Image 1 (spheres, one colour):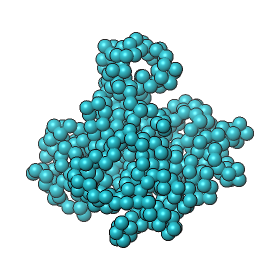
Image 2: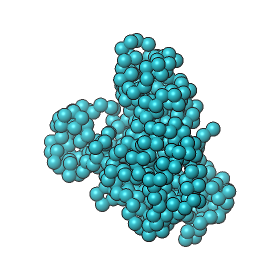
Image 3: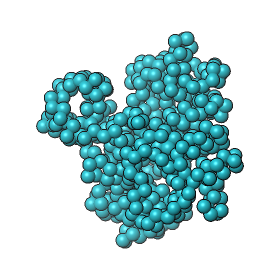
Image 4: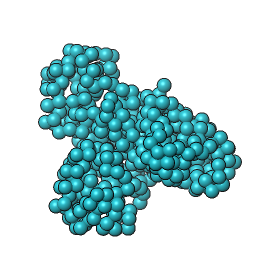
Length: 234
Length: 234
């Protein structure tokens, strides 16, 4: 692995507080690999053999039941997935595939568990990461259950606008099929939701979004840190 | 606190592997309290001051946004909530209220975090608990996104039947309003789902469910350990 990759991984909250020998041991067993777009990295139901670290590209976590499929999250660099299955030594509940050409580091799950038992800094960081993962899923489930399709889309667009520094115009970061799936709707209901948002201050042109009336959109979506924020630590 | 309560708490997976002095210190700061039915124990958005242990009764975890409310889980004895907010020292994302008269032990969150830093057995157990909490929410979100109302209800009934030892007849453990909310539907759509399930081997009479054709119900709901199981450790 390249020295700058090691440094980037070392800098993640999950690894930052590890003692150096423990981190070195973990990295010793790890290796990076480049995967083409649309490659299935892991399949739900398989045993969790590796903690994955996305260094470049983007990875979709998705779930499948019968002929249905749904996007659960998109992981962007630099970030890990899926710690919970690794810690429990249990089958993955989600599948993962690359959305684009991606470089990914694979860390054997058995070494992750060993590091947890040995290194208190890593143990504390792992608990923080799992807690935040849990909380982010609570938000996702609340959002699905409490808001209708239009409100969910409105809240998502406000969040993207905020991430872009309160920009009124921005380009959707993911294709609409994936956005619809993440927000728990069909592509058709996403189109209807975009149309309905015209009356609430949103103009859409292909992948380009312009928020023409932020106050109207906020009145509809009513952003809430208990529903929307990625991190919500006071 | 009564000696038998201490023993019950000590026996939970979360506390089982703690060293005795650490467990004693944690219990020293804890106290139990009896709450009447329908009492709000915690409110989403408030700081997480206590880890709760339900000793008797039942507690509903729910979430609210504007005038909407949804049931996220029902916690039954003996079990804890909400560890993730305590570990992160972050606001609760869910509210909690007693469904019936309940006896609950309150453990100060600051002591929980201290025990985590000091006791490796507790640290490992906390990570296992958080991982399983995360995985259980993944299942909840997958269920909401991948199955329609009828399929969700069918899978829930199969699970209850299984918990009752493959019993064909059983009584719904919670009122229908709460069940509907947990499954992400209105009471009206729950009624419609029950009616639709007649054609798939389910007879309902008030709170009493009889599965007249388990094979037909299984064909519809297609139970899946990656969606349904409470625990899914190989």
